[in-house]
Image 1 (cartoon, rainbow, N blue to C red):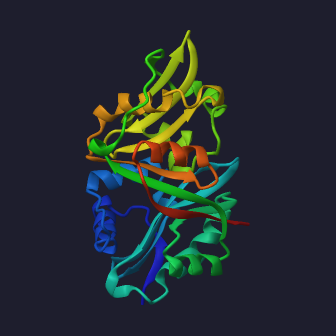
Image 2: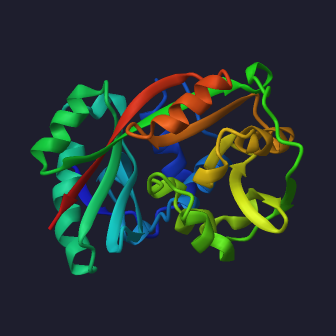
Length: 282
């Protein structure tokens, strides 16, 4: 019989082994280093993450990130998986039910996760657990050599920016970034990111934050009065040489933000899929 307990004191090699086996049938695979970076960026806390064990073998798990989200102490499901031969036994649901009171005692007031919209079985399970859809996200992917960098702006200067400028950067937003794209997530691994701003006469007109190791454009925003002038395209062009991947991606843009949808499509970066952000509060 499986026993549920926290992942505190579990060696990372064991976590990686279970993660790799649970997601072996997924198209995209993560190396041990990539998993470590992903969990670090998303605020993984082992003592508030849980697994189902049988004779010390990790059968199913939920890796929880802990932090502030929209002003509330939050747990974020940064990865839930079950080994193939143990699926259908309700282990993931049992882990969740075990986790909730522990998280509540730790002062957490809400649980956030993201799930692919076409994964209707998972969406149904989460709804039964009390989660409600809070937002819908798009994600986009394209090969670097297929991006159309046509409209550029030669009147701006590109300079590094710092997270200390974030108050001004937020004034450019059309929507609040998701957990993994938040300033808090970026700050956890700040040295991993290339952060640049577009300036004219020392005025910041737009900025972009890019993770070259993963090919992830984490944030991109331009002041409303200066859009459609090639600033966004110029920022992307400046960052593409830093990409260590042949494929780049824009993950978790709100579906209601038509400006980013049209902009990315104009660059030849197509919509690849959609996710739900789901939240359970208590």
